Amino acid sequence: QVQLVESGGGLVQAGGSLRLSCAASGLPFSNYGMGWFRQAPGKEREFVARISSSGGTSYYADSVKGRFTISRDNAETTVYLQMNSLKPEETAVYYCAGRAWSSVVWRYWGQGTQVIVSS
Figure 1 (cartoon, rainbow, N blue to C red):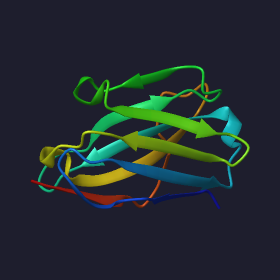
Figure 2 (cartoon, rainbow, N blue to C red):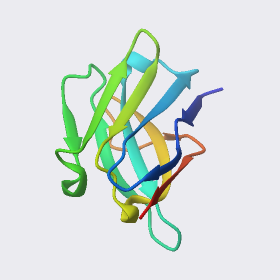
Figure 3 (cartoon, helix red, strand yellow):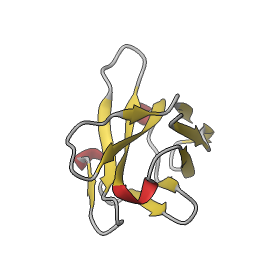
């Protein structure tokens, strides 16, 4: 069974930092692009960042450019999201997702981890 398990969420003050982790199993991780999404209460899920299967290409939502960094360790089958200078409006459940290198569909999703940014 494919599993994506997020961790690292929690409570942080505005301006602080968190690093989220997503541990993957049951899929050929090195052949999958990985991404991070978030969903605030009452809002639609939005794209945050993605990284190619090799780790050679990354892309970020405009709202997080310069503050967030996505990375991956294929040997450990884990993807990370380093979040700096966090803002209260970024309080949300953060989700990890995966897609095959040739696909445009995010097929696999984790259960999410809660991030609360206090003002």
